[in-house]
Each structure stands twice: as structure tokens, then as C-alpha cells.
Length: 308
Image 1: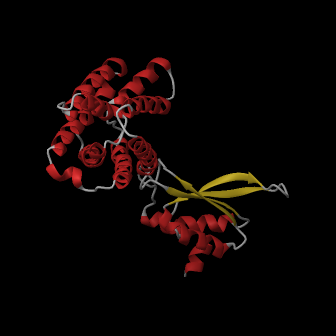
Image 2: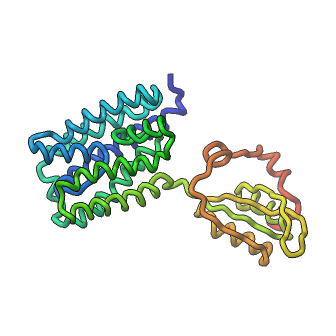
Image 3: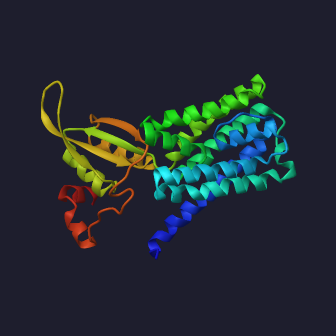
């Protein structure tokens, strides 16, 4: 039985799967198929077969291929992979079948370049939503994972190889402009996917070198309410040993924290880096807090006097 605390996680997972697969089906029906833009995956194979047999239902082809590849994944990769992939393998072709039955969905734009731009951005967003919850859209991803399991080649390379093979098959039936639009979709998908998978997880990392590290340490913890890690270091010119501060904060706190540090030591050496994702205490798990009476007694005397 699920614990109450897990309901939110399961709801978010389900919502991302539904939204991601629905968005994927929409962009294929609205922008890819009307303009004959080439793309990879089982959708690309369905488009190829649809060119050969015009009466063939692309959504049905995608569903059959997904089921065959899903069973292959179950045999080779195991039950865990099957359970995390089966939802998308069913949702996407079902959503695509519904989208194809909307009469005006292919007439949202008459500009093929605009269609390719929207298709690439939405494709990266759709795949990113699914991948953020640890799932997969199935299809040709299964082929890449199976080949990786057998031959231990990089998964990213295998995904690109399978996509280019499928896109190459479509190129036999397409005009040069449609091929170029397909490459544009692939590039935009890669950029958007990278941004979507880390969206909302980015943090800022500060490394502070200062002779007043004790004052800065106390101010960051008790005034800025952020975590601090002390690191041993040695200066390069004078070879003096000391401590520096490592601090990871949300982007919204960056200005206040840097101003606080500079107010305590204008000569402080600060490096600021963007971190794509942070896990652990205070971020993906609860923060360490002191009871009110202990927190009051733990505030450094000089800092408390200064605040007063």
C-alpha cells in the first residue's frame, strides 16, 4: 500500500507521462506528418510504411512496433524496464490515433519552417517531461538499450545511429527541404531536451576565499539561512593554509548572498558557478534545523550583538 507521502510523487509521475505523450502525439499530427518532415523512432518507421501503403494507419504501426519492442525489452532488459516503459508505449500511439482524427490539426500553419521549429521545441519538451520521471517513450529507445546491453556501446551513440537509419529511410521518399527540416527538428529537440531535464533543478555554487571566513560562515548560516561547507585550502602565492567556504544556493538568493559577503569583506575572492542539479540534505531531503531554544543560544555573540 502506498504511503500518504508518496501520493504526490505518483501523481506528478502520471501527469508528466500523460502530458509528455499527449504533447508528442500532438506535434507529430500537427507539424511532422502534414509537412512530411523526417523524424526518428517508431513514428519515422510508421511514416515510411505509410508512404509505401497510403491506407496504412501510422498510429497502428507505431502501436504494433512499440509492443514488439517492449516485449524484446522485457526479455533482454528485465521486468523493471518493462514496467517503467509500458505506460508510454501504450499512451503515445493511443494519443496519436486521437490526434489524427482531429480534422483541422494539420492546418495550424502553412509555413514548413515554423512547423519544424515548433516540432523540435515541443519534441524536446515532451521527451524531457517523460525522462524527468525516470520513464522512456519506448520505441527505438529499446533497440538502443538492447544493443547497449549486448555490445556495451554508448547509449547516446546508438540512439543517434538508429534515428539516422530511420531518417535515412524516409529521405528516399522526401524532398531535400524536408530532410533539412528534419535535421532542424533534431537540433532543436536536443537543445530543448537538455534544458527540460534540468528545468527547475539548477542551483548556484559559490566558493569564497577570505581571511574573515568565520564571520562570513556565521552570517551565511544565521542571516542568509543557507548551508555552508568549510574546505581546507592553501593560497597560491604566499602558500598560507586556511579555510574557504563552499555554498550552494537557489538563484533567487544569489544577489543577497554576494552582497552580504562583500559587506563583511570587500576583498573576498568569490567564484560563482551554475550547477545543473543538486541532491541530498537540504535539497532533495529535509534540512537540518535546531529547536528554537537551541538556535537562539547557537547564534554567535558578535553576530547577535551586531544585529541588535
